Amino acid sequence: MSAFWFASENLFFTGSLFVMLLLGMFQAIGLGDLFGDADFEVADIDVADFDGEIGGFSDGLLGLLGLGKVPLMILLIVLLTIFGLVGLVGQMLIESLTGSYLTPWLAIPATAAIALPLTGATVRPLAKILPRDETTAISRDALIGRFATIEIGKAETGSPARARVIDMHGQKHLVMVEPDNAGQVLEQGEEILLVRREKTLFRAISRGGKKLPSLES
Image 1 (tube, rainbow, N blue to C red):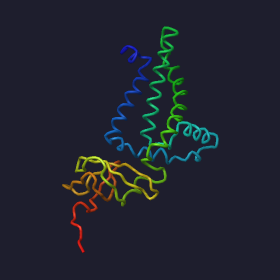
Image 2 (image 1 turned 180 degrees about the vertical axis):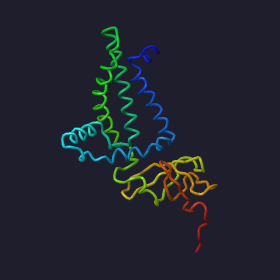
Image 3 (image 1 turned 90 degrees about the horizontal axis):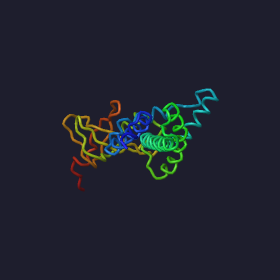
Image 4 (image 1 turned 90 degrees about the vertical axis):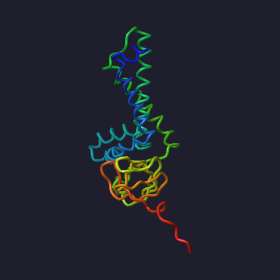
């Protein structure tokens, strides 16, 4: 079986499944948010800026793929999974019929032609049950000055944790944060204030709810 998985004609499809597993692992432990800026940079492209013919083609292709319906990381995981599985199953069928695998120059584009609409068809029902983790309406700098809550882990200098923040449109964002002050620890469940951003990492301070005693009347 390993000969099938690692045959030169199938390496591209096997590699897609391997990358999918890595992305899924990153997403599960929160590291997928380190690539969060890609969501906004891709989504901020206005296809109307192109000529009508090219823009219409791009708009149709992005709509077919389901871009914008689910977080970009989830879309990539679904696309890589479908692409890898369709490619490997197709090669298995071709080999059983002809005795040899289809050359990658034909197998890859043929698989892509099948995987793209299948990805869109899979993403649409997923969009109804998955929470939206980001919105195309704002940039991440717009999250500075908003309160967030540490969801997973505790944030220390050099050791970020994942936090949830709601933007002005009510959309949820998952961001990686570290304390703005050296030596401070932001605990899981603590409410924090995002004060600045360094690339994909936000710096935050405690709102004080867990640190300060409540005032008694």
